[in-house]
Image 1 (cartoon, rainbow, N blue to C red):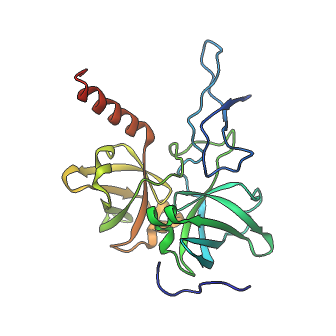
Image 2 (image 1 turned 30 degrees about the vertical axis):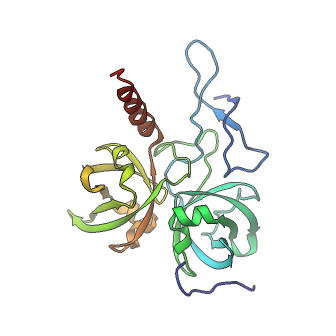
Length: 259
């Protein structure tokens, strides 16, 4: 198969409801969500407009990169059995970034994704080269356990791993520095954050520096790419939407003098 780049420089029952459109979903699914939550008064059930849980299923490997002008097509090879439900138009989170499948190659256990300039600019997907590993999670289905937190796959910023330390026998502490300090106000101790698509609990926070700690157990290090990330490595960050809503609402109320 010809390929544009081979390595080189890094460049219960359920209610159907209407919801805001999401660009990472195919047209046939845009605006539709399903909710398992039923209020006690028997009214309509509500579900946050999210499609991932932050529980990474495994690691895929970059097998081909086709470069275009402010555009690239990534071909990723997945572990055996990972593509049972894969089809064109379905959503997969790659390093926490919601992408749409454009081609399924079942014989080689590969999927293709088109990635536009804005995504390449805001995430670490533009840095991927042949042979790199990346985290993946398929979109959640109705009835799936929400083991992490609600994740949209819309990355807010990137961050660098500025420090790594072994704690205890096998656990690891990562010190993370946000690329855009503007988002530091949404990162709170014991709050949620998605790092390369992984649902994690925030440790200590240094607001002034835009830095915070993450404590990782051996299973997270084994299943995800964080076990291989060096100091200085870049990760994608998606802040928790509920935290963002609360912080922004309080700021607006204070600005109006209502608090």
